[in-house]
Length: 182
Image (cartoon, rainbow, N blue to C red; front, side, top):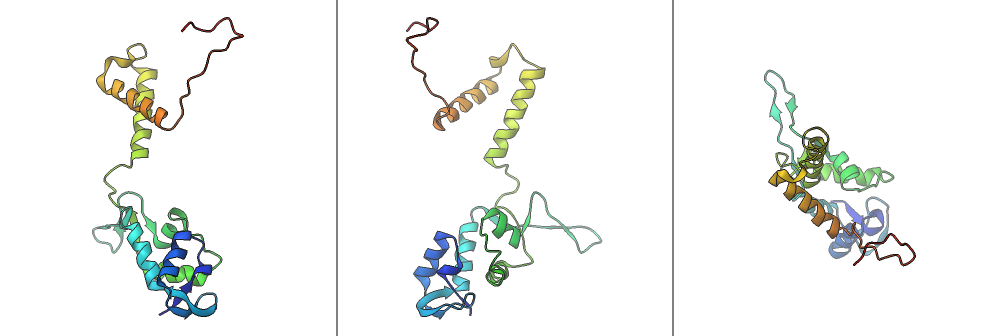
């Protein structure tokens, strides 16, 4: 069973996991030696799996008739792509550790979002905005709020703009004679 120390990992949360589970006296990846400085790599992999559980799952491939190949609906990632690109675990300069993490999670696995049939909120908002812009430009230029869905969409957009601090109330300019009366 290989052990990993805190100095091998850049992520603060994974460093804490190692510190909390440290039981080994040597690190198999950097060679550091000391009393209880390293945790089993299986513990680190288990914690990564637990954190991924809400966002990612093993992709369910659909067999293609007459072939050993499988088709995966939606976007899928290999284990190394998932660790590297999506989770931001950039330890390319430590290939032995990266390989151990990939092998612990399953090097031949394909991963997808936890529910690929449900569109993520940011994607849903992007599609709604594109649909709204099309309607304004090509269908209902002067009858913008005639549809209840459009009115609800604009109200939601307004709520989000306020929530993200994108709207400010500007004060009156005393030197400008064109200011509006109170």
